[in-house]
Length: 248
Length: 258
Ligand SMILES: Nc1ncnc2c1ncn2[C@@H]1O[C@H](COP(=O)(O)OP(=O)(O)OP(=O)(O)O)[C@@H](O)[C@H]1O
Ligand SMILES: [Mg+2]
Figure (spheres, each protein chain N blue to C red):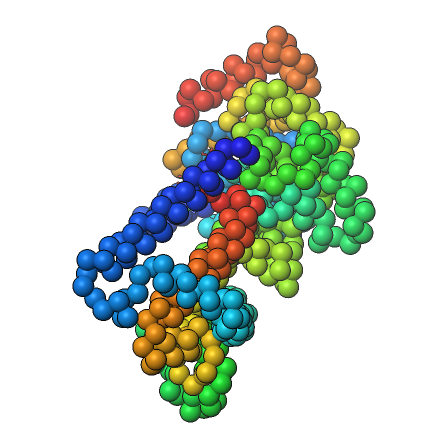
């Protein structure tokens, strides 16, 4: 197993009252999987992602990647955060390059890579814009390019397309899917849009809130991605709706 | 573009109007206030004096020495305040030490140190420079400390995500993140320090705008006194505008709308 989430619970203290954000979560993820976390607001998706990426520690249980307990963030497992945290004093291109600056490479190599990923997210013309001069959706795309640029083995994405319009969303979904098929990276992707989960992932993990826990895991057959009139697609959508109605 | 030009002109007209009203009040007080005209000269006379002082070159000499003292004191304060603020802001036990210390020392007017500074350094440029230094130091120090304490967590998270190590975190994240606050602190410090320029030059020196004021008082030259005050006000305004120009630019760059 590549990533093991083993009996993980997470409790926050809020005004001295404990909040159980996650309760006994168990999940194993193979290398090269595209996993979607699906669930309503407040069910602990971000919390779990934070722990997977090493920003936070479980209250009990353990998360292991290749057998080693995750205890700190690593450039090999980069995260696109909910809410785009670009550095306002850097242009789009320089924001994409920040991660590359930690790697051993020349200025020209950095620029080449930044150009490639800015192009992939459709922002070549905005390379020299500062975040203050970009829309929310554009900033979100820069933050995706920034993570892809460092070529991580695992990519965590927390609702990375939430600020995108439908058309750029479709385009970037396609790019990410292409990238995943080509590179066989492991991607863990948070969303609350059912269609997006079916289109992108090979497994959908459904969470329910209060306390956050996994209620169902669905395998997505390749045929389901071919269109919303495919029987596989309809079957999965029905299954998700049924699970959600019962448990949420 | 056209709109901003109109706005600038508009603002300028208001400023001009304000000055005009001030001069009008002054003129009215001169005419109906019943003061001795030797003590309260009319605006025209003061303006004439101002031109005379400019033409003889006397004013220029004093302005130059004042600006020199001001920039030395101010620059040293900015450098010292920034460095101290950045270090203190990073180390929490230091900030706990410095906090009560500044609260204790800050209320002491910079001029109060004056006699002491004269005793230590003697007369000359040093006392004036020191007074300006003390006045400018605290705003820079305090704004730097408070800004480095409340850096947006998401910026630091970027550093973690991409394994940016020290000292790069400091130069790539922390310094630029607090840059707008530093600029704001420098702006505050400029205003405060300018106020103390005159006070700093009232003792121990025989040059500068502060000296000019004291000298005019001793010789009962009200018109020179008022002309110098006008010069101090005007220079203060210009300095402020220059700093504001850079501050607005920085803020726009950082996406901060005021
Ligand atoms: N730092 C924190 N302190 C206290 N409570 C927290 C903290 N972080 C999260 N929580 C709580 O944990 C629960 C799960 O939060 P989380 O952010 O993981 O939800 P989410 O599934 O990502 O929701 P959304 O879809 O809205 O992003 C919520 O009830 C939230 O209030
Ligand atoms: Mg979330």
